[in-house]
Image 1 (cartoon, rainbow over the protein chains, first blue to last red):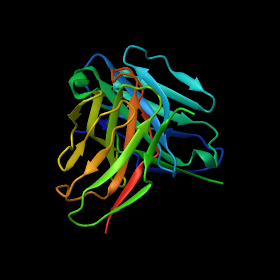
Image 2: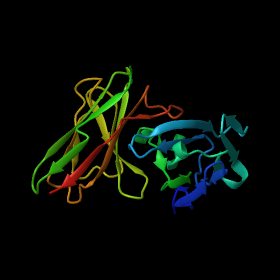
Image 3: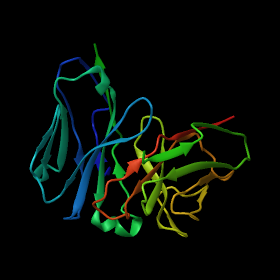
Image 4: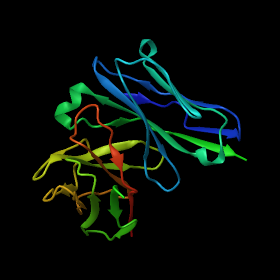
Length: 118
Length: 114
């Protein structure tokens, strides 16, 4: 089974619409971290947010907001009033305490491509 | 400006040839990582290093080799043993390689087989 699942492969919206990206994760660890990265067409991954397993407080940063729910193992990401510059692939990733011997690697979901049309 | 640089941006490999991808960081990070990204997929870990002169295999290390002679540099060699090398390769670094740290990524190298 996938450890990090991003069921939406592609989402297309018109500018100013809101878009929510789903991320469901699987872990037996009680201590873990979740991340969201953005990959614009240039290819570089840009860090957006990090959240630890003990902090379920949702967060808003400008037009971005994140909803972390341990009960459903989800860490969803919403872009409010989308803009063309938001067009990119967005990745959810998991870092687990049990992976310390493996360099605390990030396990990535398959990504969701967001296309914002003008 | 502090950051991670990767070169070249595009690399072409002939059959049976070894090629080396460069990764340099000036963030003073101890940990460095190499990931592979195939089209439409997430990233998978190839190798990582948490300290100079030490490195460990990731999930898909076969056909790859690395070295870590300097803190700033973590080159990746794609050997002829890697039968399907066409992919986008991303290098990352973090302060010490611990659980809570954010990994920061370079711009990537796209490897194509001729």
